[in-house]
Amino acid sequence: MKDLGLIQVYTGNGKGKTTASLGLAFRASGHGFKVCMLQFMKDCSDYGEVKAAQYLPGFVVIPVGRHDFVDLADPAPVDIELAGKGWEQAKKTIDSGEYDIVILDEINVAMACGLLPAADVAAFLTAEKRNVEIVLTGRYAPPEIIAIAHLVTEMQEVKHPYNDGVAARQGIDY
View (cartoon, rainbow, N blue to C red):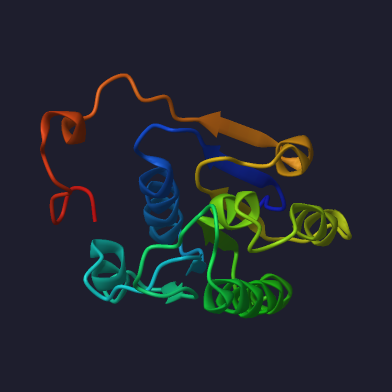
């Protein structure tokens, strides 16, 4: 029996938010769960999770952003448009009944920089009880999301190799 329906949040300035959600997806896949990850503000076929998804039965990764960085202080109209379309797709995915877990990767950042209204996301996620676990990742989780979540984990950076000049590494950071 699948006991699902909680809202989980992985946020904070430390590394590991997406990685934690992927660990959950990996574990769930091992139990036969169907998992969909929608990646807001991302569109890169070179990410390890996109490549690995083809090997995990029932795990799908869908990019709903673009490959370029988003100016968080002044998002481009295309970023607002893509986030809106991505959110519409996310709502359909959540309500489809096809998946046991839906991961909204980087949606916290999308809300925090004004690509999506946090109040609308929170209202949708709490409008009805669903038999689907929903995971929201990204820095800057809005207070509206923290308030409705059943689990909130804040990643805290203590030390990071980037500060010593180490660039993002394939297979480790992406």
